[in-house]
Length: 534
Image 1 (spheres, rainbow, N blue to C red):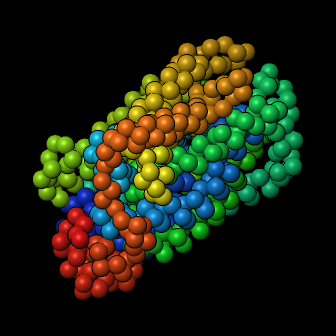
Image 2 (image 1 turned 180 degrees about the vertical axis):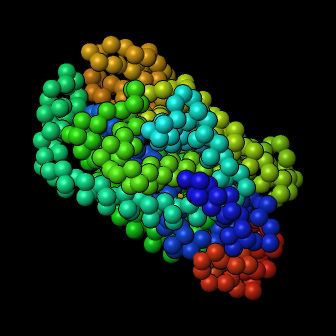
């Protein structure tokens, strides 16, 4: 992990541009990553400690319900192939870095752009908290007690990104995939030497059969459990597009083909996700126990207990890096959102590129502190719940940031009203969800999970809030059009959504990080800065 930290700090010198102190360079790596760099960065930011620590902890605790992450990740692939490509094109032609900038231009509303940016920042903090909690679990397993692991986790993440920006997680992702490839192979060998998957499922089934809970088990329960499962899948699949870091990763790609190739190859990571989910059952069958009540320590504890010390050390380092990379990308993306949609839009419209980069660096630290606050405030039974709570919040930007890629039919004021209504309903329902312990005892009265009930049927809160949001946005748009309230001017054009790297209006860099050198015309365009030209 020390070696990885040094690699992250030194990433600022990797293919160093003439000036790294701009948001274009620090925040999106110069928009010039080729196929392999984008592939590793995408895997590092999207398949994170959530995949390798939090999901196995969930299957260990509740069984089949934890597998919702597998179909959700699979559904993301075709959606990403279509919609992320459109987002790449319009963002490159106009110089956008964040969803807030796009929505402001698409619907002609600076206020809507700021609201989307603030929503994204708040929603990202619980997602970063999942990564920090996982890194904290790794350090606890290695012997660091008390609150020191959390402080160490924040310090490591901060050091790796403050100087190097997106280049740090891009380089670290390559090392992370090598280590995690070894971890997956080693885990398969240990399972095979311990009786195989048949024995694993038999013992895990016996465990769940002996628990008093009616919601756990190797299979989903009746219709109610399936409704919760399906809404979790749908809500999670939609929410992933709206997170600022999802767009940041793809905007770093050099052209549309790179985005499409990486979207098409994403199911490879889904295989690893499914395997890691099953390792939760394996840990259960081997009698692995968490440290205290921290279920995030299940995977680190399993590797420490069943593997030779040198092998366990490599596994723990891999898990730590898997937490470090996405936390870095998420904090960068949230900082970009603040700088472009709030700081430059409202506070300093004439901010220089260097000033933007400086503000983003310091904002990224504030976002990490906010993530620590989420850990201390929410403290759920499963760290996955922190990501799902963030999903409830970010889902409310879907009408503007996601559907907006296809149509500008919605009225800007209706979108703002829908966003507010969805957030109000979502947060109110989350507040009323209690966390239950053994025997149904209430452990915590508020923010105890993300599943509510509608007419006795358990569903994901994010889907309910999004439906309210859409209903308000559609109704409001119809009313405002009848009243002839002026809509905002769409500053994008239909051909913006199909623009590619060879488009003369797309900003290019003087060098590509792992692709072909740009054309002389592209070099001239790069010197004109990030703002688009007509």
